[in-house]
Length: 262
DNA sequence: ATGCCCTATTATATAGGA
Image (cartoon, rainbow, N blue to C red; front, side, top):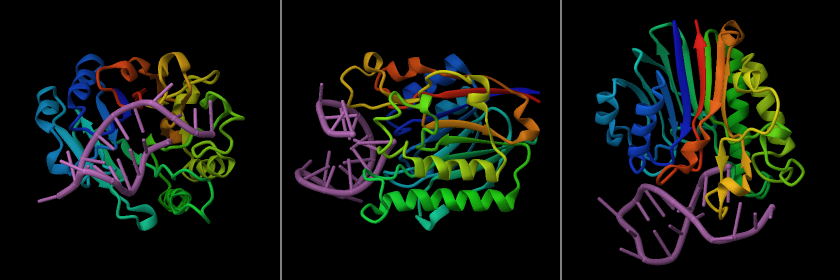
């Protein structure tokens, strides 16, 4: 079977219910992974999603911060939920689809301002979170799996608007890029987005602070779609729905899509 | 690279985002 999946940091699923519905109506991915829902699970507005055919959901939530959810048209059961780095944060949920594919949805800690764990505890937590992800996937040896989410790291030079200017900015520092590579290698994960779009600038996030995000185009590719090697060849059709960054009351992230023919 | 920003909170300033 073939299915399409999207990942989107929504920055409040309740405030942005209208544009979640717009995405589901207009693009109709089979599976939508959301991050930064900023809502307890019981307050996620599921009725409208279900009315569009997204009758399955697995989620973790907390009040005000973090929160991850997977909405699916395909029957799905909860497969895992880890609290890496013991932060007591809702940053990971995994679902197993009826077709046998496991989908991991992550919201990796942003890491604060200064890229130095001695002066910025949050940066240390980000590195520790990635280390524990790495070790977990090393033990888990994932198969027939997809990993998506806001990983809060733009690894490649062409994943940011200016590589040199961002070398000391959290999200693109060499230590984070190396950590992300370790995590990716431990699970054998293939970057599906860059498998499909191997060349050129590609972003999924543009700051709210830029006066004209579209013209300035100072973006970063923080949102990722990975897959295990046994299904990576089935991945295709990757794209960033940049237009969604310009929708009414937008998230600062745009959805990233990929399809799999299995 | 900072920032003319944005969100949730038993809110009315603060913490967090990246």
